[in-house]
Length: 172
Image (cartoon, rainbow, N blue to C red; front, top):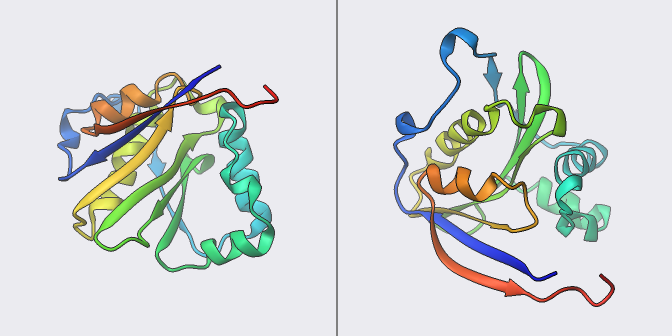
């Protein structure tokens, strides 16, 4: 099956007040602590637990040494989503390119999807991404990702600047 890949960007901080969220009265406490120097084991578990259902593969292709070099880079920030102190997802911001931030990975553990948490989590991560006032924040997603991903990103103010079609893999 052909996969569509969308490259999305924001060139200014979004108006996160306009995004729909769960009302405060029924809202669990969300925090997004940064994980400094995550262990390879913990990171791989997060990556697989969040990205496994969507066939994320990029970090699986790296050996431990390659992955450790990325995770130890001070320009790479890994955040966990905690919902009422329970681990619910993770995000990774990559600031290694001058004046821009890539939202490299973003997602929820399967048991936390469909509860309106993704929007709130994205708002918190975008606040982190825009703290250094980059020229742009960007990401890519694809038609294999969570069905709501593209809608969530565009509702948050991301615009598509490139779209590509990837042919099916030979063994698929």
